[in-house]
Each structure stands twice: as C-alpha cells, then as structure tokens.
Image 1 (cartoon, rainbow, N blue to C red):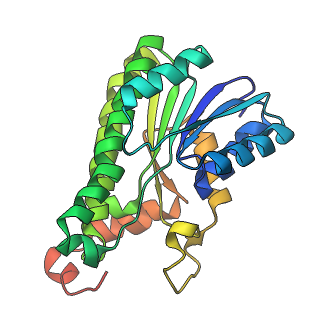
Image 2: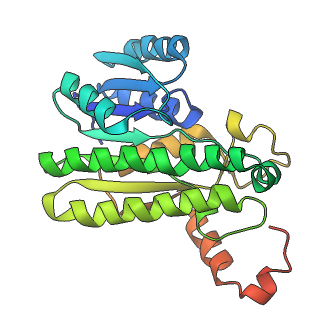
Length: 249
C-alpha cells in the first residue's frame, strides 16, 4: 500500500475518521486537499500532515452539504491536475426522536447525509470515468442494512447512499476505476460521544482509517469496518420480521 504522490481529496476532513486516514496517507507522501467548514481546524490539520510527510496539504473551506458539488469538485481537481482518491467522510447522526416530528430537522439530515453526498459521488464518478482510473471511498454505516426504530431516517440515508455507490462501482468497473462504500459499526468519535455503554464492538477511528486506506487500493465495493460487522448484519437482516419487531434495536 503506497500512496506516494497520489492526489487525494477528503470531504469532511475534520472528522475523526477522515483525519486519521489523512495521517496514513500523509506518511506515505500523498498530496492532500482537505475540505470542510472549519477553516482554522483544517489549516491546523494540514500543517500537521506536512510534518508527517505530505509534500502538499492544502485546504478548501466550504459546507459540503450546501455546496455545488460538481462545480467545486471540478475546480479542486483542476488545481491538482487530476484525482486519484476521493474520500467522502462528512455527515450527521441526527436525533431520531427530533427528526420524526420535525420536518425541517428530517430534511436537513436527508440533505446532508444523502442528497448532497449523492451529488458529490456523481460528480466524482464523472471524473473517474473520464480518467479511467482512481478510487472513490464513501463512509456509510451498518445502520443502512436494515431499518430500525432507533435510527431509521439516518439509516435510510446511509442505505440509499450505499446502493448509489454500489451502482457507481458497477459502472466504473469496466474502465478500471473503483467506488467503495465503507460501512463502520459503532465508532468512538465526537459524533457518538452522547451514546453510552461503550463495549467490545466499539472501534477507534484509527482502525477504520486503516481499512479505508487499504480499500483505496484494492477490494470490492462494500467494506464492513471492522469485518465482524458483516456477520453481525447478516444475522440482523435474517431475523424474521415478526421476531424483529419485538426487539428494541
């Protein structure tokens, strides 16, 4: 696994998983563009990445959920002279009880986690198809594998996004480019800080980052992170509805 000199764009670069992945790529000598809302935070991350070995770590301050994905991505890729890897790592968890009863909150969650993310994915797929090379990695969630009362609006966004990425992967395969949806389980990040009862299934951002960096180079269009979640979600999907509906998942 060697990303030396590769041109990498990270959307939502200030997130814990994105930053951990950027550190891996920086050590390997990748050229990085960090995209996100917090300019000061991005610049601090970029400065650190350069100390780790990145020959070029620049920042673009914008709100990915509201930006014109096609125009913004085209401009960034033009400055880089191409695109080798794109990582889409932004999103919000939302509060199920709020989004169920507040249409504006539900619309914001859907816009952030699906609509805008889909726009970035479609824009990236155009570039990768035209280049006939490169990889797009999108952070989804195991929540998208089956609707559950505790997070079905968030899960619907991640489930739809996963299907989109799989379709893009199918389209890109004949030309040699790749698309991969990364499906983490429960990850210990600021976004999940309010969830109690951290146990054995909780992963650290660095563990997910390692999987992302590997999948940028090889592997199929779906990657559970860690891989144990593939078996866990297989069981959850297989539970018959009459039994499943008696649970509180």
